[in-house]
Amino acid sequence: MTKYALIFLVTVLVTGSPSMAQKSNFMNKVTKSANSILGKPENTKMEPEPSCASDQATIAMDLGGKLQLDYRELSISILSDGRILAKSHGTEDYYVAKGGVTTGPFKPGDPQIAEFVPKDEDKKDDGFAEKFKQYISKSGDKYLITFAGKKYGPYARIDYFVVSKSKDKFAAMTTETVVTTEDQAKQMEEAMNNAKSDQERMDLAMQYAQQVQQTMAQGGGPESLQSKLVTNIPNASYDLLKSGGGTLNGDLKYDDILILAYDKIIDLQMRTVLTLTKEAIGSRNIFVNADNTKYAYYSSGKLTFNNNTSLTDMFTPSFVKADGKVYISYMYYSPKNNAIMQHKIQF
Image 1 (cartoon, rainbow, N blue to C red):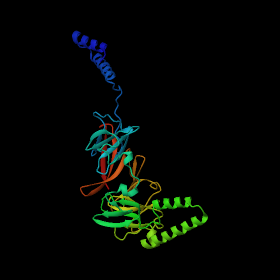
Image 2: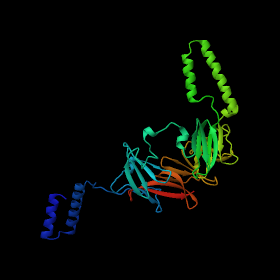
Image 3: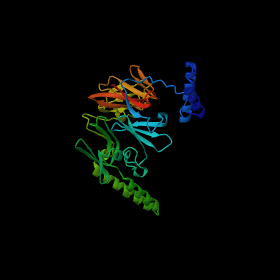
Image 4: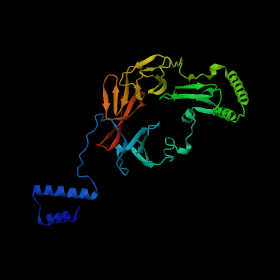
Protein backbone atom coordinates (compact mmCIF):
# COMPACT_ATOMS: atom_id res chain seq x y z
CA MET A 1 0.00 0.00 0.00
CA THR A 2 1.43 3.43 -0.93
CA LYS A 3 2.09 6.15 1.62
CA TYR A 4 -0.79 8.31 0.30
CA ALA A 5 -3.29 5.43 0.37
CA LEU A 6 -2.28 4.73 3.97
CA ILE A 7 -2.71 8.40 4.95
CA PHE A 8 -6.15 8.49 3.31
CA LEU A 9 -7.22 5.35 5.20
CA VAL A 10 -6.15 6.85 8.53
CA THR A 11 -7.99 10.07 7.70
CA VAL A 12 -11.19 8.18 6.93
CA LEU A 13 -10.98 6.27 10.18
CA VAL A 14 -10.49 9.51 12.14
CA THR A 15 -13.02 11.77 10.37
CA GLY A 16 -15.79 9.25 9.72
CA SER A 17 -17.06 6.80 7.11
CA PRO A 18 -17.33 7.93 3.45
CA SER A 19 -20.31 7.26 1.24
CA MET A 20 -20.73 3.82 -0.35
CA ALA A 21 -19.48 5.15 -3.69
CA GLN A 22 -16.46 6.73 -2.05
CA LYS A 23 -15.82 3.56 -0.07
CA SER A 24 -15.95 1.39 -3.19
CA ASN A 25 -13.67 3.72 -5.16
CA PHE A 26 -11.25 3.87 -2.25
CA MET A 27 -11.07 0.08 -1.87
CA ASN A 28 -10.39 -0.32 -5.60
CA LYS A 29 -7.50 2.13 -5.33
CA VAL A 30 -6.12 0.37 -2.26
CA THR A 31 -6.39 -3.04 -3.97
CA LYS A 32 -4.59 -1.77 -7.06
CA SER A 33 -1.86 -0.22 -4.91
CA ALA A 34 -1.41 -3.44 -2.94
CA ASN A 35 -1.30 -5.52 -6.14
CA SER A 36 1.30 -3.16 -7.58
CA ILE A 37 3.47 -3.51 -4.48
CA LEU A 38 3.12 -7.31 -4.47
CA GLY A 39 3.82 -7.59 -8.19
CA LYS A 40 0.38 -9.02 -9.00
CA PRO A 41 -1.36 -8.18 -12.28
CA GLU A 42 -4.36 -5.91 -11.94
CA ASN A 43 -6.42 -7.86 -14.49
CA THR A 44 -6.84 -11.41 -13.18
CA LYS A 45 -9.73 -12.62 -15.29
CA MET A 46 -9.94 -16.40 -15.06
CA GLU A 47 -9.52 -18.32 -18.29
CA PRO A 48 -12.37 -20.76 -19.00
CA GLU A 49 -11.90 -24.47 -18.39
CA PRO A 50 -11.09 -26.44 -21.60
CA SER A 51 -13.84 -28.31 -23.42
CA CYS A 52 -12.44 -31.68 -22.33
CA ALA A 53 -12.62 -30.78 -18.61
CA SER A 54 -14.48 -33.12 -16.29
CA ASP A 55 -15.75 -32.89 -12.72
CA GLN A 56 -14.36 -36.39 -12.19
CA ALA A 57 -10.81 -35.37 -13.14
CA THR A 58 -8.09 -35.45 -10.48
CA ILE A 59 -5.12 -33.15 -9.94
CA ALA A 60 -2.09 -34.81 -11.51
CA MET A 61 0.44 -32.00 -11.16
CA ASP A 62 0.09 -28.92 -8.98
CA LEU A 63 1.73 -25.91 -10.65
CA GLY A 64 1.24 -23.46 -7.80
CA GLY A 65 2.77 -23.41 -4.34
CA LYS A 66 6.48 -22.67 -4.09
CA LEU A 67 7.30 -23.79 -7.65
CA GLN A 68 4.93 -21.46 -9.56
CA LEU A 69 5.33 -23.26 -12.90
CA ASP A 70 3.81 -22.12 -16.20
CA TYR A 71 2.23 -25.08 -18.00
CA ARG A 72 2.97 -23.46 -21.37
CA GLU A 73 6.69 -23.74 -20.61
CA LEU A 74 6.65 -27.47 -19.81
CA SER A 75 6.99 -30.66 -21.82
CA ILE A 76 4.90 -33.37 -20.15
CA SER A 77 5.28 -37.16 -20.35
CA ILE A 78 3.97 -40.09 -18.33
CA LEU A 79 6.50 -42.45 -16.77
CA SER A 80 6.10 -46.22 -16.77
CA ASP A 81 5.06 -46.22 -13.10
CA GLY A 82 2.33 -43.60 -13.60
CA ARG A 83 4.29 -40.58 -12.41
CA ILE A 84 4.47 -37.42 -14.48
CA LEU A 85 7.78 -36.08 -15.75
CA ALA A 86 7.91 -32.43 -16.80
CA LYS A 87 10.83 -30.58 -18.37
CA SER A 88 11.07 -26.82 -18.35
CA HIS A 89 11.70 -25.39 -21.82
CA GLY A 90 15.15 -23.89 -22.35
CA THR A 91 16.56 -25.36 -19.13
CA GLU A 92 17.83 -28.65 -17.73
CA ASP A 93 15.21 -28.56 -14.96
CA TYR A 94 12.93 -31.58 -14.50
CA TYR A 95 9.94 -31.96 -12.20
CA VAL A 96 8.19 -35.13 -11.04
CA ALA A 97 4.56 -35.31 -9.91
CA LYS A 98 2.70 -38.11 -8.19
CA GLY A 99 -0.72 -37.93 -6.57
CA GLY A 100 -0.92 -34.21 -7.38
CA VAL A 101 2.27 -33.38 -5.48
CA THR A 102 5.09 -31.87 -7.56
CA THR A 103 8.76 -32.11 -6.59
CA GLY A 104 11.89 -30.68 -8.18
CA PRO A 105 13.68 -29.20 -9.93
CA PHE A 106 16.01 -32.11 -10.71
CA LYS A 107 19.02 -32.08 -13.03
CA PRO A 108 20.02 -34.90 -15.44
CA GLY A 109 21.81 -37.59 -13.43
CA ASP A 110 19.82 -36.96 -10.26
CA PRO A 111 18.79 -40.32 -8.69
CA GLN A 112 15.15 -39.15 -8.66
CA ILE A 113 15.03 -39.17 -12.47
CA ALA A 114 18.08 -41.26 -13.42
CA GLU A 115 15.89 -44.06 -14.79
CA PHE A 116 14.23 -41.70 -17.23
CA VAL A 117 16.87 -39.04 -17.91
CA PRO A 118 20.28 -40.75 -17.73
CA LYS A 119 23.55 -38.86 -17.85
CA ASP A 120 24.99 -38.49 -21.33
CA GLU A 121 28.04 -40.56 -20.44
CA ASP A 122 25.81 -43.40 -19.25
CA LYS A 123 24.06 -43.81 -22.60
CA LYS A 124 25.01 -46.94 -24.49
CA ASP A 125 24.61 -47.68 -28.16
CA ASP A 126 23.36 -51.22 -27.65
CA GLY A 127 19.92 -50.85 -29.19
CA PHE A 128 17.07 -52.91 -27.78
CA ALA A 129 19.38 -54.78 -25.40
CA GLU A 130 19.92 -51.60 -23.40
CA LYS A 131 16.33 -50.39 -23.55
CA PHE A 132 14.89 -53.77 -22.50
CA LYS A 133 17.69 -55.02 -20.28
CA GLN A 134 15.16 -56.65 -17.92
CA TYR A 135 14.40 -59.08 -20.77
CA ILE A 136 17.57 -59.15 -22.91
CA SER A 137 20.98 -60.25 -21.73
CA LYS A 138 24.27 -60.91 -23.47
CA SER A 139 26.04 -64.26 -23.57
CA GLY A 140 29.43 -63.84 -25.18
CA ASP A 141 28.81 -61.99 -28.43
CA LYS A 142 25.17 -63.13 -28.69
CA TYR A 143 21.88 -62.19 -27.04
CA LEU A 144 19.37 -64.13 -24.96
CA ILE A 145 15.74 -63.23 -24.34
CA THR A 146 14.16 -64.23 -21.02
CA PHE A 147 10.42 -63.63 -20.74
CA ALA A 148 8.00 -65.05 -18.15
CA GLY A 149 10.67 -67.52 -17.04
CA LYS A 150 11.31 -68.92 -20.54
CA LYS A 151 14.55 -68.41 -22.49
CA TYR A 152 14.82 -67.71 -26.22
CA GLY A 153 18.01 -67.63 -28.29
CA PRO A 154 20.90 -67.12 -28.59
CA TYR A 155 20.72 -64.54 -31.38
CA ALA A 156 23.44 -62.64 -33.15
CA ARG A 157 21.14 -59.63 -33.53
CA ILE A 158 17.85 -58.35 -32.15
CA ASP A 159 16.46 -55.94 -34.71
CA TYR A 160 13.16 -55.17 -33.00
CA PHE A 161 11.64 -55.83 -29.58
CA VAL A 162 8.25 -54.81 -28.17
CA VAL A 163 6.27 -55.67 -25.04
CA SER A 164 2.52 -55.27 -24.59
CA LYS A 165 1.18 -52.71 -22.12
CA SER A 166 -0.09 -55.61 -20.00
CA LYS A 167 3.52 -56.91 -19.80
CA ASP A 168 2.46 -60.49 -20.59
CA LYS A 169 3.35 -60.63 -24.31
CA PHE A 170 6.47 -59.86 -26.32
CA ALA A 171 7.54 -60.00 -29.94
CA ALA A 172 10.97 -59.57 -31.46
CA MET A 173 12.64 -59.69 -34.85
CA THR A 174 15.88 -61.64 -34.45
CA THR A 175 18.75 -62.98 -36.54
CA GLU A 176 20.48 -66.14 -35.42
CA THR A 177 23.68 -65.69 -37.40
CA VAL A 178 25.51 -62.78 -39.00
CA VAL A 179 28.12 -63.24 -41.71
CA THR A 180 30.60 -61.05 -39.89
CA THR A 181 30.55 -59.13 -36.67
CA GLU A 182 31.37 -55.43 -36.65
CA ASP A 183 34.86 -56.14 -35.30
CA GLN A 184 35.49 -58.77 -38.00
CA ALA A 185 34.35 -56.38 -40.71
CA LYS A 186 36.77 -53.74 -39.45
CA GLN A 187 39.63 -56.26 -39.47
CA MET A 188 38.78 -57.28 -43.03
CA GLU A 189 38.70 -53.69 -44.20
CA GLU A 190 42.00 -52.89 -42.52
CA ALA A 191 43.70 -55.99 -43.98
CA MET A 192 42.45 -55.20 -47.51
CA ASN A 193 43.66 -51.61 -47.22
CA ASN A 194 47.10 -52.79 -46.10
CA ALA A 195 47.43 -55.40 -48.87
CA LYS A 196 50.47 -54.70 -51.03
CA SER A 197 49.31 -56.32 -54.26
CA ASP A 198 46.19 -57.37 -56.15
CA GLN A 199 47.11 -60.98 -55.57
CA GLU A 200 47.27 -60.45 -51.81
CA ARG A 201 43.85 -58.76 -51.90
CA MET A 202 42.47 -61.69 -53.94
CA ASP A 203 43.85 -64.18 -51.42
CA LEU A 204 42.28 -62.25 -48.55
CA ALA A 205 38.94 -62.16 -50.36
CA MET A 206 39.04 -65.95 -50.86
CA GLN A 207 39.96 -66.44 -47.21
CA TYR A 208 37.03 -64.32 -46.00
CA ALA A 209 34.65 -66.08 -48.39
CA GLN A 210 35.59 -69.42 -46.84
CA GLN A 211 35.05 -67.99 -43.35
CA VAL A 212 31.57 -66.82 -44.35
CA GLN A 213 30.67 -70.27 -45.69
CA GLN A 214 31.87 -71.90 -42.47
CA THR A 215 29.86 -69.41 -40.37
CA MET A 216 26.71 -70.11 -42.39
CA ALA A 217 27.21 -73.88 -42.11
CA GLN A 218 27.75 -73.72 -38.35
CA GLY A 219 24.79 -71.38 -37.87
CA GLY A 220 22.30 -73.55 -39.74
CA GLY A 221 22.63 -72.47 -43.35
CA PRO A 222 21.37 -69.43 -45.26
CA GLU A 223 18.06 -69.42 -43.32
CA SER A 224 19.92 -68.51 -40.14
CA LEU A 225 20.87 -65.20 -41.77
CA GLN A 226 17.23 -64.18 -42.20
CA SER A 227 15.37 -62.06 -39.67
CA LYS A 228 12.68 -64.10 -37.88
CA LEU A 229 9.78 -63.39 -35.56
CA VAL A 230 10.16 -64.64 -32.00
CA THR A 231 7.18 -64.27 -29.65
CA ASN A 232 5.15 -65.98 -26.94
CA ILE A 233 1.90 -65.24 -28.82
CA PRO A 234 0.44 -68.53 -30.18
CA ASN A 235 0.19 -69.12 -33.95
CA ALA A 236 2.02 -65.91 -34.72
CA SER A 237 3.71 -65.13 -38.01
CA TYR A 238 5.12 -62.08 -39.70
CA ASP A 239 5.10 -61.56 -43.45
CA LEU A 240 6.62 -58.24 -44.43
CA LEU A 241 5.00 -58.32 -47.87
CA LYS A 242 1.50 -59.13 -46.56
CA SER A 243 1.78 -56.47 -43.87
CA GLY A 244 2.64 -53.82 -46.45
CA GLY A 245 5.83 -52.93 -44.62
CA GLY A 246 4.12 -52.68 -41.23
CA THR A 247 6.05 -52.74 -37.96
CA LEU A 248 5.47 -54.43 -34.61
CA ASN A 249 3.74 -52.19 -32.09
CA GLY A 250 2.99 -52.79 -28.41
CA ASP A 251 1.21 -49.46 -27.82
CA LEU A 252 -1.84 -49.81 -30.08
CA LYS A 253 -3.70 -52.10 -27.71
CA TYR A 254 -3.38 -52.56 -23.96
CA ASP A 255 -3.19 -56.36 -23.90
CA ASP A 256 -1.81 -57.32 -27.31
CA ILE A 257 0.91 -56.71 -29.89
CA LEU A 258 -0.20 -55.67 -33.35
CA ILE A 259 1.33 -54.59 -36.66
CA LEU A 260 0.84 -51.00 -37.73
CA ALA A 261 0.83 -50.73 -41.51
CA TYR A 262 0.14 -47.65 -43.63
CA ASP A 263 -3.67 -47.65 -43.59
CA LYS A 264 -4.53 -50.68 -41.47
CA ILE A 265 -3.78 -52.56 -38.28
CA ILE A 266 -2.96 -56.28 -38.47
CA ASP A 267 -2.64 -58.92 -35.74
CA LEU A 268 0.19 -61.44 -35.54
CA GLN A 269 -1.90 -64.04 -37.34
CA MET A 270 -1.80 -61.61 -40.33
CA ARG A 271 -5.50 -60.77 -40.06
CA THR A 272 -6.64 -57.19 -40.64
CA VAL A 273 -8.02 -55.88 -37.36
CA LEU A 274 -9.01 -52.37 -38.47
CA THR A 275 -8.80 -50.20 -41.55
CA LEU A 276 -7.88 -46.61 -40.71
CA THR A 277 -9.60 -43.53 -42.04
CA LYS A 278 -7.40 -41.21 -44.10
CA GLU A 279 -7.39 -38.71 -41.22
CA ALA A 280 -5.90 -41.32 -38.86
CA ILE A 281 -3.15 -42.42 -41.26
CA GLY A 282 0.25 -41.34 -39.98
CA SER A 283 -0.90 -40.66 -36.43
CA ARG A 284 1.71 -41.62 -33.84
CA ASN A 285 -0.91 -42.26 -31.16
CA ILE A 286 -3.60 -44.80 -32.02
CA PHE A 287 -5.70 -46.69 -29.47
CA VAL A 288 -7.61 -49.92 -30.22
CA ASN A 289 -10.15 -51.33 -27.76
CA ALA A 290 -10.18 -54.92 -26.48
CA ASP A 291 -12.59 -56.42 -29.03
CA ASN A 292 -11.31 -54.40 -32.02
CA THR A 293 -14.65 -52.62 -32.51
CA LYS A 294 -13.41 -49.06 -32.11
CA TYR A 295 -10.27 -46.99 -32.16
CA ALA A 296 -9.13 -43.46 -31.47
CA TYR A 297 -6.25 -41.37 -32.74
CA TYR A 298 -4.57 -38.30 -31.29
CA SER A 299 -3.20 -35.27 -33.14
CA SER A 300 -2.49 -31.68 -32.09
CA GLY A 301 -4.48 -31.67 -28.87
CA LYS A 302 -7.44 -33.56 -30.29
CA LEU A 303 -8.47 -37.17 -29.60
CA THR A 304 -10.83 -38.39 -32.33
CA PHE A 305 -12.86 -41.60 -32.16
CA ASN A 306 -13.97 -43.61 -35.17
CA ASN A 307 -17.61 -42.72 -34.43
CA ASN A 308 -16.65 -39.10 -35.29
CA THR A 309 -16.80 -37.83 -31.69
CA SER A 310 -13.75 -36.03 -30.31
CA LEU A 311 -12.14 -34.41 -27.28
CA THR A 312 -10.11 -31.21 -27.67
CA ASP A 313 -7.68 -29.07 -25.64
CA MET A 314 -6.03 -32.11 -24.08
CA PHE A 315 -2.63 -33.82 -24.26
CA THR A 316 -0.62 -36.96 -23.39
CA PRO A 317 -3.31 -39.62 -23.93
CA SER A 318 -2.29 -43.10 -22.80
CA PHE A 319 -3.70 -46.48 -21.84
CA VAL A 320 -4.25 -47.26 -18.15
CA LYS A 321 -5.92 -50.17 -16.41
CA ALA A 322 -7.84 -49.89 -13.15
CA ASP A 323 -10.24 -52.28 -11.42
CA GLY A 324 -9.87 -54.72 -14.28
CA LYS A 325 -11.01 -52.16 -16.88
CA VAL A 326 -8.99 -50.45 -19.62
CA TYR A 327 -9.21 -46.67 -19.98
CA ILE A 328 -7.74 -43.93 -22.13
CA SER A 329 -6.27 -41.42 -19.73
CA TYR A 330 -5.61 -37.83 -20.82
CA MET A 331 -4.46 -34.56 -19.29
CA TYR A 332 -5.45 -30.93 -19.59
CA TYR A 333 -4.59 -27.65 -17.95
CA SER A 334 -7.16 -26.27 -15.51
CA PRO A 335 -6.99 -22.48 -14.96
CA LYS A 336 -9.42 -22.86 -12.04
CA ASN A 337 -7.03 -25.19 -10.18
CA ASN A 338 -3.77 -23.94 -11.75
CA ALA A 339 -2.91 -27.59 -12.21
CA ILE A 340 -2.51 -30.33 -14.77
CA MET A 341 -5.62 -32.47 -14.44
CA GLN A 342 -5.98 -36.13 -15.36
CA HIS A 343 -9.16 -37.80 -16.50
CA LYS A 344 -9.86 -41.27 -17.86
CA ILE A 345 -12.63 -42.68 -20.01
CA GLN A 346 -13.43 -46.36 -20.31
CA PHE A 347 -12.35 -47.83 -23.61
